[in-house]
Length: 385
Image (cartoon, rainbow, N blue to C red; front, top):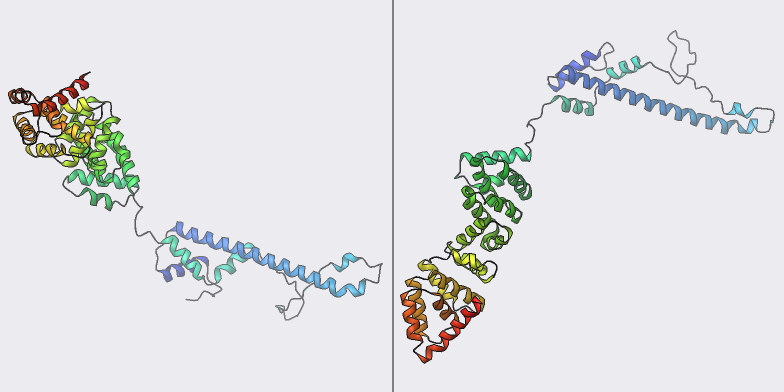
């Protein structure tokens, strides 16, 4: 490939560059390349003009310095002549063989400049720019965060048993961005997609999601799922605190019941914290209609807790739950250890039924038990006033 051929045209050079790079280019891409070369040509012309102006300035300074001794003593000579630049003889021979001097600065037309620039070989930088403008990107446009989260929601909607955490991590989104987009879709998505959104929120959500999940739990059809998602985010302790953040009595009752029936010690402790609160005690006790065998054992164990508030809360729950099994368990504690803590007798005082009445009738006739009975009745009297 000969780039120095004087008969080579711009089209020939472009064709050879394309052949060298083995790239199929469009007319638009060739136009970009030609525009790039024209810009380079103009920059080269400006550089040459600056260099020539600098040479002329240096020549003028040298001429003034050399001729100063000759014209300084003569006041009649005009100093302006000393600043006139001396002509620079051209060393190029005349085409006719005559060595006539020519100006050093040969002004060329823009057409000649483009022609000379086109006849030179392209530089490595020009090859790179040409390839960069002609090659198509290997990958398409990166999907936005919205497109990513929508894709994950759709995958989870099609396969509800898929691992939500793995899908959320595969999206590459930060937790804050994922939660923000999921909360936006929680209020806008259809019911069939809300399940997928809640599954993702359970693994991406933070306490910032509490208000919107409580708002969603006002809908009866999605109340249980919304509260389950909230519990996974803030744990049972946070779910108990969320009671104060919702004015809806149905949602509050659902939280009370969820904590009471969870059948775990952590959930029971969170429920007992609501019993200790005067503002929530009455409504929280309303859901304590019955206790399981395991829950009964845990509540009886709480009657020996070091914290008096915990013992009193457990006693109130046992007394409200009532039932033959609860009453028999409390009677057994009081009989085995007459000097039991006051909370055992308070729970017995709250129990209803024939067994509780018979036991209190017996206890009032026993001097060693009468003190415990009176203290429990006095406590209830203060509570009712």
